[in-house]
Image (cartoon, rainbow, N blue to C red; front, side, top):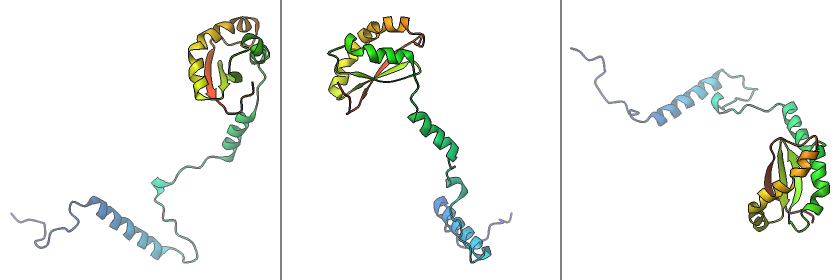
Length: 151
């Protein structure tokens, strides 16, 4: 039986797929450069490394949603009664969205000290939840650290 493989030196790139790929890409760029119009720049980026761009409308919608403040009777009632319910608590209501009340504190120490008190805070807010028409069925209280919390 005759072998179809030529007798002679073995393939120097055998076992080096990365080197073979680089040489193939370099040769493809050279062929592209030979066919390209000299006045136009060559786009050398492979298609798979290009990142899809975000449309301007989507970007502006996200920015506006972050800046808009929605009126909510429940959150307004919590803010109005906070100092009477919790006069010595080092946290303030910061924002409210989708049944989640975010309390702002200044330091991580305050955050860790308030974490065990969250069930008591939730229980104290129960009368406000019952009286407010915009109150959520399920309330979650989260703590966030903000340096500019006024007491």
